[in-house]
Image 1 (cartoon, rainbow, N blue to C red):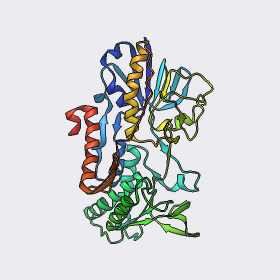
Image 2 (image 1 turned 45 degrees about the vertical axis):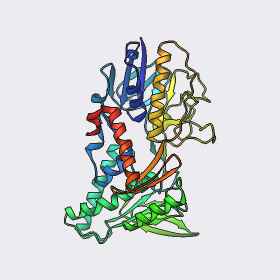
Image 3 (image 1 turned 90 degrees about the vertical axis):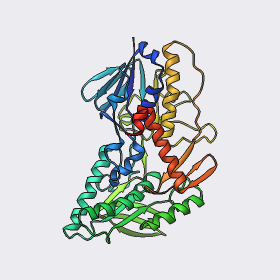
Image 4 (image 1 turned 135 degrees about the vertical axis):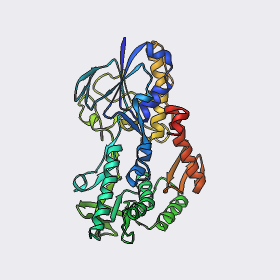
Length: 392
C-alpha cells in the first residue's frame, strides 16, 4: 500500500484531510507529522500575545484527524528523496505533502535575531505574552521605561497586534496594580503608510483609529539596526533611535527552515516554486510525487505574474484542491484541473471593536468588517470540528 506522508498540521494539510473522500483512506497509509500536538489558529496569535485569548486558539490534532490518519509528534529535520528525517526517526513516502509553516525573515538587519522577538507559532506568542507581564512587573519595581513597546512592521500582523495590545495592555497593568500613563506603543513601518495593500481611504480610517487608541505610527522609517533597548531608524534622511523595553518583529516572514536545510530542493527564501498542480518546478530531480502548500510554496498568479502572498485563506484552498488531486492519483486516474485562486476578501482587525477590509470590490469598516472576520474564523472552526468547533 502506498505511503502518503503529510508534514505540518496547519491550514493546508488539515483542509486537505477534511476534504478527502473517506474511501481514499483504504487505498493508502496516511501519516501526519507535526512538532506539536496542537493545531493553532495562526490568524489569532496576536491575541495570544496581547492576552485577549490563550488556549482558545488551540485544537488537539488527535481530535481532528480521522482514525485512518496516523499522527506523529516529532520535529522534522530534513526532506530527502523518498524519505523524511526527524529528530527521532526516518519516514518513507511514496507521496509527500509539505505544509510546514513560516519562519521570521530578518532581511539581514543587524541585531534583529538577538534583540527582537517574532511571532512564529503559539509557543512564541505565549512567550511574548509572558515577557509583557515581566515588563509590567519591571515597571512596578521602578523602571519607568519598561512599558515602551515597539512593533516592527505595519502590515496585517503588526497592525492587528498593536491594536490588540493597545486595548489589552492597560487592562493587564491595572490587574497588577500598575499605572498606565507611561505606556508607549509604536508601530514602525518602512513604507509611507501602514497596510499598503489597502486603499488610501481604508489606510486613513485605520490610521486615525489606531492613533485614537494612543498608538504612535512611525511610517517611512527604515529600520537600520536593532539594539537591546530600542531600534535605529532612518527617517527623512536622518538617523534616530526609538527606545523600547520590548521589540516585536512582524516585518517579514519566509518559508520553513526545513526547506532551507534540505539540499534535495532548489529553493529561495526557504520556499519552493510550484506549478499550477502545486508540484515543485525548476528542480534537479523529478518531483511528481511531491506537493508543496502554504507558506513554503511559491506560486505565481497567472494574471499578474507575481507570487501569491502566503495567507491562511490560500493555504486552505490549496489543501481542498489537493484532496481532489490525491483522490485521482490514488485511483490511477488522470487529473488535469489546475489550481486557481481568487481572494474572497481581506479583513484586518483593529482590536476587538473595529476592523477594515475588502470583500470583492467593496470596502468595509467597523462592525460589519469585524463581523465578517469572525464569520471566517467560525467557518474554519466548523471545518475542523463541526458545531463543536464553533463554540471551542
